[in-house]
Image 1 (tube, helix red, strand yellow):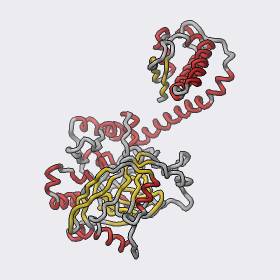
Image 2 (cartoon, rainbow, N blue to C red):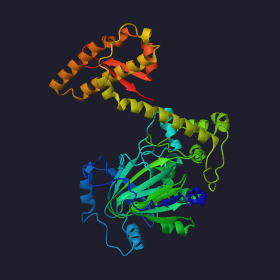
Image 3 (cartoon, rainbow, N blue to C red):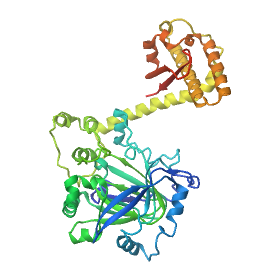
Image 4 (cartoon, rainbow, N blue to C red):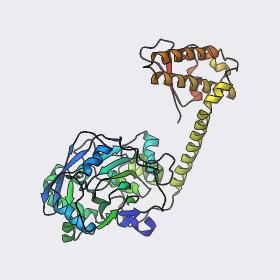
Length: 455
């Protein structure tokens, strides 16, 4: 895509093959909750507007659809998209629509592998791999339920990342985009028209409150493109690509961010909003360390800033990227091996109850690989029992049965009869990356719960 120059426009449309669907049916999402819908109130005139958001009470998708199709909020009659665009800018300050934005989750079926917004496998995954951090809507998907005139104001993505947006169903979405080469020109124009906003925060466009009409952009010679996204189509925004747009009527889109090695220099240079604690800020250190190791030392010293060339596409590959991908494949293969073991646990338990009980010191038999695996299975069985007890603790009869089964388990495997304080903990840690245990509330001292985390 970038080899064809798509990144220079700041926005690109991708149309999947006919017959490709990320979800078999959308008939079962009516009860999905939109926890924090926002009413968008717009003030301004002559092509210059400021948008204010007021949070409303939660709505289900079914309730939102009814509202979107009601006489007050429904799409007006129009001849073509140009006619609808004129109606949008003419009536922007009248009748404040409600936007079901930032709904955490995905509508993709779990078995979809191609272009799955929840599993893009880009280098942005470094955030979670190295830091264990999940940033809602950035490295996890968000859903957006729109109605006529709901708007996303001029902005670039957090940390100037890439973004991907898929329109699952419903009415189209109109987009405006400014080439990254001309992003600074838009910022200067916005600063001139909204000086008070700039005084409050130099990165005020990150607040997503500023609307400038295409008429104003034309008047001041700022290049832009506009395109309409239909249901079943993807839109890709590129680093430092300013974009804005509006929905034609009731629809549902899914979006998240991703990154390539080309983004790293953009991330290092991204401006930050200083007036809000909620703004996303990502440390660039792990990205520079893994994918720009030759620049890492200077970066840590605050040196080595790079002048960004917006015309250069992402390289097809780099040695650092190949190394990272290989490590990911190995990790994935290892995790799949663990998962395969876990799927066979129930039948394995049933077939190994006649095995001799293990007793004595853990250290004494830890050298045996078979015994290590045997111990691992016993730990997992107790973990499952504990989790089942937690899920069923409201049912006294089931809880009693679980206590009986746990007692039977301890009887079969007396090695685990006592709490882990009597065991060789260090040796046990060899069997698993992490092994936590504690007495739960209102449980007897010999009732312990463990949580086994596979890394």
